[in-house]
Amino acid sequence: MIKAVFFDWLDTVAHPEPDRHELFYQVAQELGVELPPQRLRKGIYAAENQAPAGAPPRWSEGKDEAPFIRYQEILSAEVGVKLSREVMLEITRRVSQLARSATWVLYDDVLPTVKALKQRGLILGLISNIYLGRAGLETYLDFVVTSKEAGVDKPESPIFLLALERAGVNASEAVYIGDQYQTDVLGARGVGITPILIDRYDLMPEVSDCPRIHSLTELAQYL
Image 1 (cartoon, rainbow, N blue to C red):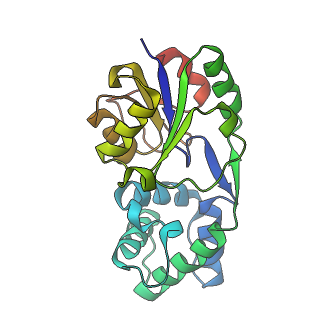
Image 2 (cartoon, rainbow, N blue to C red; image 1 turned 180 degrees about the horizontal axis):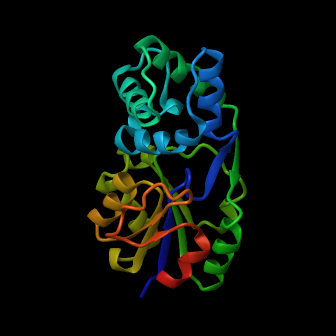
């Protein structure tokens, strides 16, 4: 019997406005680089799945540049554009600056879903490496667990185990919904939590070893 539902934050329940693909496109244009907009979402997904430590919001001067270069290399390869190291770092710097002033917005399916889950008496939690905004969700959450509190990032087990402790449930009594296969699906599965992949933009049709949904309105059938 499912007693708790845990959510990822970015691209699962909330997104920045303007969104990251818009910021990358804007910044690249300013630098004289054309990034195919129709492929940017896929590129960002691939980069964040394979090199999450290099995501622009994590940038600060003096940090090791290697993860950020790796992130940009993955994104560039996905969109089919070759960039110099200098341009990659400049894109990272500028997107990082713009991302800090972005507004966080919940997807339209979030509040109806969490309200319905609360009415069913389920414990609701958020598990996130980076929790950058509130966006009106706190009223419905019993707790938030961040990588800072756990001392590790997803997909490491302690962050998921801390969520189970906060919820007071066994792993078999919880499900976790996230948009990243490596960090969310494999991380949750590693401690025995049932993972559900949310693929809002149909970027991962190849995933078949766990439930894959396109909207949180589909979640009820798995609880």
